[in-house]
Length: 251
Ligand SMILES: [Mg+2]
Image 1 (cartoon, rainbow, N blue to C red):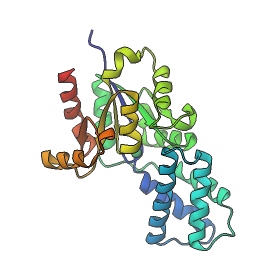
Image 2: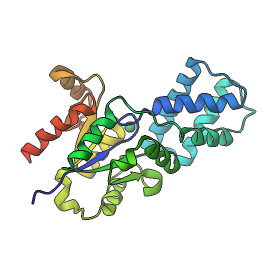
Image 3: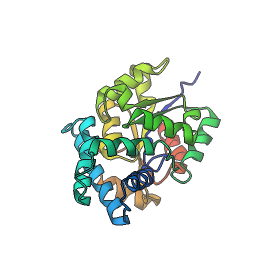
Image 4: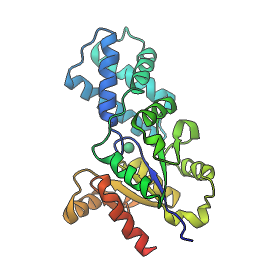
């Protein structure tokens, strides 16, 4: 019998639009404290937030520190040092639970793959467990996959090898020695998904919006540093079956 392939999907900016979710939750949260945020201010938060998660990926800061530090810095830019960053962060995170905005077409692509039943599907996310669980349930993602691995629960972050080792240990009937070459991570981030896939010794598909056509894909590939160069680049998830077919054919 043909062994199945194991597809590990990143969640944020791959399947669900986290930027829109954070924008909505941020506006809701700060409104509670009497602040009506402008588009520039929500954009500024997004930049501050990204900087802090990148620091976590590089191991410079703990997850707990990321969460409150980003709000401490953001509240400073608003001149609202009077607010408790930990409390604002708490309100914001609970607000995120209600925001499951789909990347257009992404869930349909997963739905089709789930219906075909050829591959075994999983989710792999660096995120807060209660937030991701709620968003997976709201979007229906949790019913399309066999399981999900969220860093807060796993106790390790992408791109660490530990994250993947611990996830593989939880997949029934998964033998890393045998199945690694049939395992693929699909994600938008070179620093967490693609580098993580390389660290884990599995295949990698980079979701890079705009990398359309042979030329677009080649240009995207050229911008990826050598240690995190993906096996394939796609512009959106509708192109995934074709990218996988190429990998399966050479296997
Ligand atoms: Mg992502």
